[in-house]
Structures are given as C-alpha cells and as structure tokens.
Length: 362
Image (tube, rainbow, N blue to C red; front, side, top):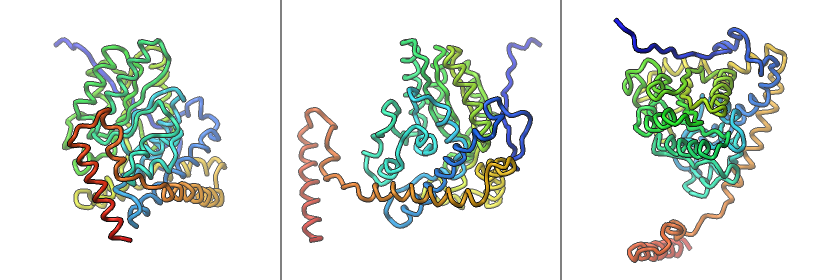
C-alpha cells in the first residue's frame, strides 16, 4: 500500500492542571515574573465577568455571554498581538479585547443593547463583535490578504468556538489562507459545547486543529487553560505568519464554566459531574499555584488586587449606567444615504410611540 501523506498534530502544555511545570518552559518564561501582569489581567477579567452577570441578574444589562473559564486563552491571544494587527472576535473574547485596548464600559454598553458599544474607542483596526458564528473568520482572511498584497508584516487573528469550526465560513477562511499563504491565525476556542450540542455530536474529527490540514495550514492543539502554552502557541504561529510562512489553526482546549449566556440553563444538557471535573482544570487556580510556588504571589496580594479590580470595574459600570440613552430615532440613522419612504414612515411612527410612552410616564 502506498501512503500519500501522513500528518501529526503537536500538543502544547507547560503547566499541568495542578500548576506544576511539564518539561522546560519556553525561553520567554524562564523568568516566571513575566507571567505576573498577565495573571493580574486574568483576575481583572474574572472580576468583570462576575459583576457583569450580577448586572444582568438585576435587570441592568441584557443577555450576557460569560467568559468564565476562558481567561487564559483570551488573555494569551490578546497579549500575543501587536498594536497594528487586526482582531476579529466572536462575542465572548473580553480578555483579548481588554488587552487590545477595549474598555469595559464599551462591552457593557453593547450587552446593554446599545450599538455604540461595538464602536471601540481603542483598536480602530479591529472588527466589531460577530454574533453569527464564524463569519468573522472570512473578515480576518480578507484583512490578511490585504496585508500580504501590501507587503506588510501584520497579522490577522480570528476566534471562533468548536461549533463555529463546523461552519462553511471557517472552512472558506482556512482554504483561502492556505491557498494564498495568508498571515492568518484561526483560533478555535474549544470549550466542549456549541451551546447545547456537545463537540462529539457536531464533528467526527479527532482534533479540531486538524481541520486546517485540508487547507494546507500549520496546525496546533494547545491546553487553553495553560497561559504559557497559549502564549507559546500564539508566538510560534504569529512568527510563521509574519515571516511569510502562511497561516495556522490553533485549537485551544478549555471549558465553559458558566452557561452559554445568561439566557441559557446548561443544567438541562450538561452533567454536573462534568462541570465539577472542569473546575479542577480552572486556569486561574493553575497559574495561581505556579506563581505562589515560585514565591511571586500570595493570598494577601490577591485579595488586594481583586479589591482594586472591583473598584476599576465599578468605575466602568458607573460610566455605562450614566451613558445617556440614544433617542429612539437613532436606530434609523446611517442605514441609507436616502432612506426609502417606508423606512421614513417607520421612523415617524417610532418617534410618536416613544413620545406617547414618555407622556404616559410623566
């Protein structure tokens, strides 16, 4: 029998679930002090996430997608990008977006139902959130093509979930990246569940990383709860892309410790024992243990920092709550240069209804 080709998928892990080193650390992290600011950022993300859920539960925020359990993956992705790179997120990568300069008040504004929260004041070159899953992968591929045509050493990064990696948009993006050797990194955040559908029910692939092989891309599987592995995986793929060696698919193995969104109840489809087991691989506990063992972190330091994070998030919450609500007619603005007559009629009807409601409340 003649074998046409064989492939392997490399797996990266440097800290195990107990926070103990596995093999040699990458050169950039021989000094563990380099991880401290990123661990602090992970704690900030978790503090923000907790307070955002509380806001939703008290009716001050719309449906919200928690990132609990994804902190290492998200912060690692964001920390690995340069200022001039382009990021195409889905709707959950807050940790990466904070690293890119997005403000927490903008994220809250978006989940509060105001599209101005999607107009980031920080990275103007990044794409807005994409709720239709994986469509952002094509946008990132387009940006990567522009970089290549211009001879720029910039990188385009897109994130999607395990369910998103089964969408045609994902495959079209990776096929383009392979065909044209684009500087694109497709990050598949595999948290095990495409809302209520388990990974096993939506693909027969042994790994999600290997999906990139069909397009000729470099592929890696990474322990997404290990910040060091996330950073090293991103570094390798970014370096390849900037050197003209083409794109990559990275599968980050993590877990969604909260419901899919606050409109979801994961207990209806997910076993409690599975969630309990996932908590033993919590990225926060893992890195905390490692830094504590290295004499770089303590309970007192963490308590003080969490209190500081709480104050920082409260400032952002107040800024969100104090943002003046847009007039009802704003929803019709900037849709057309010359609005059609029926849209103008709807606009006038909406203004009249809003005026009537305000008079009733007066």
